Length: 195
Image 1 (cartoon, rainbow, N blue to C red):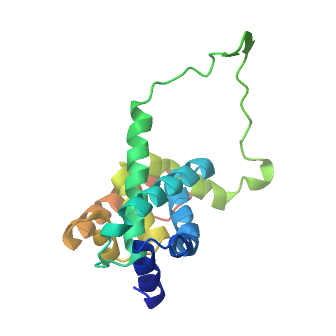
Image 2 (image 1 turned 60 degrees about the vertical axis):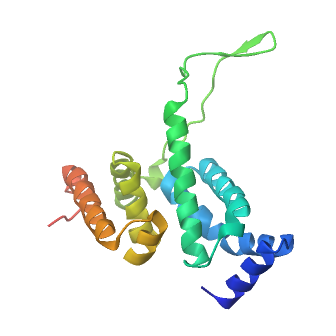
Image 3 (image 1 turned 135 degrees about the horizontal axis):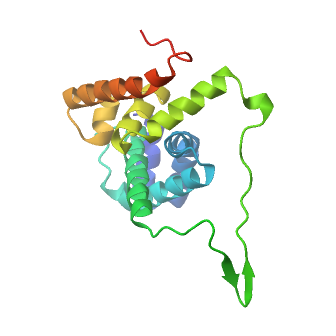
């Protein structure tokens, strides 16, 4: 952990709000990028990061510095993402055809067309789409591990610390996640060279 982080954490633990704000400013972009890669939704990613920093604020007094602050923050963001996914799955579904009543006026739901235009439809974007679809079919913990390792470039040690798992478990679960992702992607082998 950097000396600057240690100083900011100690000051924040002593009640210095500006130190906490500096710490948040330093890590908010990384936290958002990670949350976005998990959610693929900018608004949801922002909500996950906001939840995470609320947790950081309340849990910082217990932070002992045994892990790097960034690793600790990834763990919190991951937990906030998983908690939100659980809540969303438990939430009641609403029909898209159902109208909305505001006061005494009834409105039909209107949805923005977010489909790709002709310019965006080429092989690289198609691959990205297929990978995201494949990831969405996987359990959340596998998706999180793949994103942490392959997108965020976290080491096995950092992932183990983040998820509070032994390194051997991280390696075997990450390997199983890769195999599962590969099996899903082999259905589109013309876009992927999977030997």
